[in-house]
Image 1 (cartoon, rainbow over the protein chains, first blue to last red):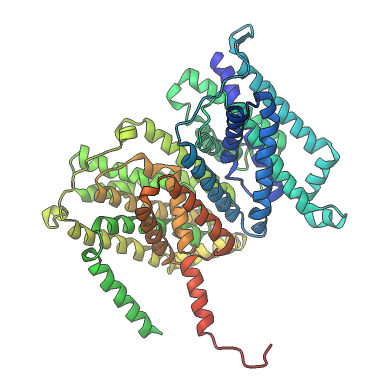
Image 2 (cartoon, rainbow over the protein chains, first blue to last red):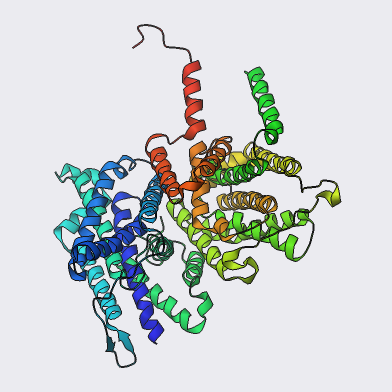
Length: 281
Length: 317
């Protein structure tokens, strides 16, 4: 039971990251391979601000995503916008290259071993069936709130409606006088900010290291294949669900915990190739 | 034109034969293995339109198969190569059958995910010796003792022969009716299906061939360097082969060979730069995708064609 609850923590990161990937893909038609690097940058931003300026965790939770999001905006303006007219593959390759550059520079500057980040909340909370470290509980609740807020923002607000419309038919939305290129830049910044926010949340749990995002993003790709990128809610449910599956596997057959998500992916491809929440295209 | 081609071919052949007297043979053999690996990857991307981002799983596991057969079972190297190719092809059948159920970018993500799964399995499985890797694979003589492979220069010719075998196999595939149908599917799948071709079967066959050739490259590399490690199964290796094909030129048959030599040479010279190699590789990705999408060979061919094309008559514009 305890492992299952802890699985939700991983699920929280899967959900936030796959949500960001889905939002970016919907608007930019680019699979953002840099997502893992941006997750790492969020954690690093929090760690550096704490170490150098003494900025507390709670402030980093707001500042780090903004900083990393702005860097994302610059990258979009400089590089990504040049390849929208090309095949999806080029976006994948370009963002892969960007990830290599970012991770390589961080490794060069800080080495690959990593540093701990002190947990802002200590102690445990009694949930009745188990005592869960309070910080991890906070992560699950916060991630859920952030995911639902993103869902609300996209599905229920006016700006979200513009976004969805621009995804469906950019030319027509432009004809209505809406600045679609700016909307695209904004979306990328938002998706990157989500990744960075997940990174800040992860900093006290994982070691802050240049490669902390690499392996995670590969698992998140599998999550995205399982869920399909068509639906925002789908990404959230799939993310948390797969975290649970992983937690359960850790209880019943620990050696498979690393690979179970990929096995689920294989099964989903056999049964419903378009993904659980995807439409066949 | 064909006279020119013959001269180029003769020069290349002479260079390939004389190379081990001018360059370090182990370096040349490694580069040839990667060149074959990149050609195998490019067969799938350039001619079937499928970008696999997980080709390291075939390359790396084939190395383990080779090492296990030759070292633990003490069998001749030919059987090791066969095991490597067969193992990679079998893995290709399973992962390929699943991956071709999705198209485009999803295909890349699925292959990447499967490769990561294989990587995790290799980390845990006992026969790979985890982080240490499978080391000290003995070099045995080939063809029942006819070809002594202790000498690097002799082994170089063996590797050159293996490379040429793989290269011409790919050449034959592409120029066969099978290759034509594959290109038709790449360009317009619906139309090919409506003409009665079962697109999925052709794609799967291309995937398995590509996997088998990547396996041949991986097991040959294990034969040369006498070890198999986790590096060869990692996602970074999958990215590297994409980079090689991209640098040389996607969809050109010579491109990946050129790209492999460029990247391996670069790594050789920059070995002391450590993590900075990653930064440089990333920068190459970015520059090529933004500015030189045809790659070295593609851009050069274009330049040559433009140069030799008749100039428009004066006052034409």
